[in-house]
Image (spheres, rainbow, N blue to C red):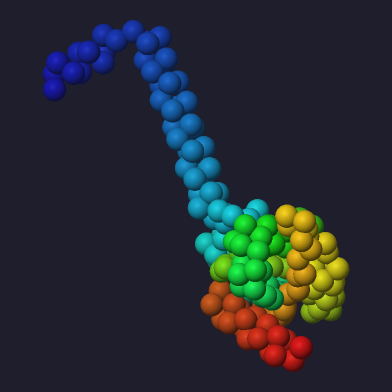
Length: 194
């Protein structure tokens, strides 16, 4: 112990400052790497959208804002119609292309502050923050029309795409699970009514 203390006291102050700066730089690099890995862990590996973890992270913040300040928000639960048929007829590459195409359509059809997340094979959720019921209904209608009207050509074949969209407004006392369940049930009601 005494030997180590004598080394610290006799060390060159410039060398110590250099070592401190090196350690600060290393800590900053590691923090940046952790933030990068955290972002990656919240993203879907196939499509340019959040995954379920990213959705729950964002949804938790939206729920907290709603509880505290009453900020209106809505969730759209989007189910891709016929993805299995596309995969069976044209291969999984066609299904992947359809998912990427749909993600890009949905992302361009909402505000930059909204979140598009893929939570399952053919299921997406769109989190609409600061959004009234009227705006959410109009957004769901518009997105469904954009998808139906879109052209996706895969290996020379036109793929017809459609979606069923359920809507749930954020309510006091909601958890991520309750909102997802309500939006999912609304999607199934909409799908069965069509």
